[in-house]
Length: 385
Image (cartoon, rainbow, N blue to C red):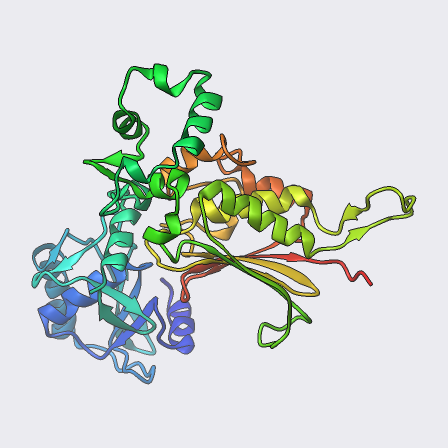
């Protein structure tokens, strides 16, 4: 890093990827900072800079001691080991140690007291909630939400008519001719573990998934105007039920609240939908398949006069970015659900859904909201009277 680059970083102040420290003396404090950055998105610690962004600098003896402390702590006071890279940068005749910490690939990381830390703005906080801990495991491909068994469920919760229809259409064979028990078939398909339905089993094929998972629904509202603060709305619905039913009903809600344009055609001919239906299908499928099921929150659909918003719980996983998504890069967050999706709804997988939507309607906006942990898609509506 060049001195000029360091000055620009300091000017911007502290945030979730940048931290100032006048000096470092406590191994435990340093361990918790390294863990927090590794469990989050990585970042830099600037040692020799006070909390107001003034460069104070370090003496040669401090530089030697701090670098030795960093080496010891990163290998002995954290689990798993973290490998920060340090640079001694001279700024205005003063030396600042820049500690670069990469986002970890083996989350969650612990300090030597067994505590898990993550960044929270310019500070850090302990992880205490089970859902957040599960997401950290998921980011290392150690755990998928849709494979987790749901307590107090069994094969009796399966909608046998729905499952039979799916099975026979997919495998071109009658369910009763499989020569296997229903529970064994469900286990083989990843829909049951140790006598309980997995989350995928509940969401895809159970009779009333909202009983076991009441927040895994879709909340849809069509507003007057363009502001969510409005008190009046045209249409509103909470959509519960199976995965396929939610997709079908959510699409129907959107279609009935959008307009059709004649474009010079005869009034006896059904007009064209004001936005691409293909794009809507792909984006809605993406929301249901790739949402973060470790977050107990509903998918939300907002229809305004000038746009449609589809908001999924969970920001993009791991190091995935909007640019990656637009290039067709895909990380499957819920592999069991994804494996069933293309047999149940219009879904291609392999990262092609967003690309197809953008090809159909290039003005779609993708927004990855890391702080609020949600992924938002905005589809502009034409100004139709």
